[in-house]
Image (cartoon, rainbow, N blue to C red; front, side):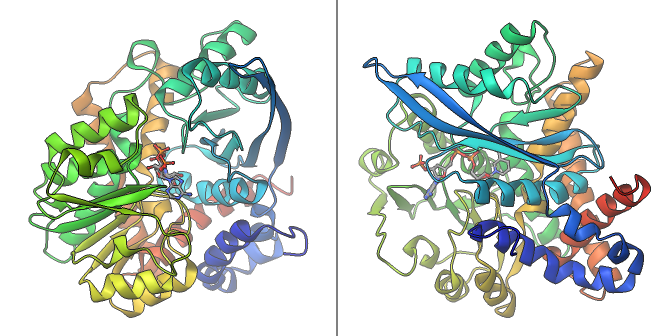
Length: 441
Ligand code: NDP
């Protein structure tokens, strides 16, 4: 930790993984001797650059841009780009670190990376977004490539931003390759990629429940966020007969006792993806819903205190603290699967597990997005494109395999049923073995 001062999110992610892989290190001195865990915590390369662009008023704007190339032991660096004012090297290093294990769990040959900028897309015009994306890619294009590093979307980076960045990359490099995933379907994108993280999350929860001879039918679900992951998680929950009752954005959340139906999700998609509006609009449109403003001084988020069976945090990191965890238990929640990356704080995870909640960490339960990005890369390399049904069935298979490999690894190390330990161990062993085979480099 002395090597990385002032990086709380990164420390949190490393700590959490270390606590569960310690047992593996003890059992396998070869990993310890080669200092594999320590090596995994140091990015292979961290690129930081200036992004200069001109806003609609003609004023020059300056932002910070980054790409963290964390680990390439099992394949090219792969991980999203995040545009949000809270982006720092610590946040990106935590995300890139998590991505190493997540990508390993998918069974596809992808290394770990992450990148982004402290640029805030909120309130920017379409022309400003385009100029920013072009300026960002002008520098990033020197450091990525379809066999080297393949970024994707994340918070603040959806299909529109991927399009603008892809256009700029193509212009600079004079080549049409699958250098980004999440592309449009007419120009190299994979069917089901937009749906993949949310759908995959719900498939994972389905597998967890099936393990206990249960299903999602009739389950009341709390969701946070209303972006890409939350939208498709809610959609799949509805399809499978569950009832989502909450969703949120950074300004507040809505609670709809009647359930957020598919029709209401269509409204949210238009509101968020086209009009770039606020979730408070939902409560104006649907009278069954109540809207609650975010109270930044509160010591908990009331969203997690509504009566429910399952919870799916799909907004951002550290959105569930210990008090929220206690509220979730009181509210009757028996399953929590993370759609976002590291949404649950470490002491909250302990609280949930003590309270008997079946907990799935994001690196396992939200891996459907990167898994399908991997499928997009395969389609780009081969030039052969699969149907919606083919990709969806491969996504289901990936989520089932991740689920089963978590349980298998946990059992092997005496932590039966612990998805957190299983995900960390299975991901770690795969990458550690590859690093060991490739020598001290
Ligand atoms: P989006 O930008 O589409 O949506 C993010 C949502 O979370 C928005 O509703 C946003 O509200 C809310 N949010 C963001 N930051 C905060 C904050 N600091 N406090 C409260 N609410 C916030 O992003 P995604 O849906 O793509 O990503 C959500 C999470 O899922 C992230 O943790 C991401 O890393 C993770 N993830 C995403 C994958 C993907 O394929 N997209 C893959 C795997 C993980 P507002 O509009 O007000 O900002």
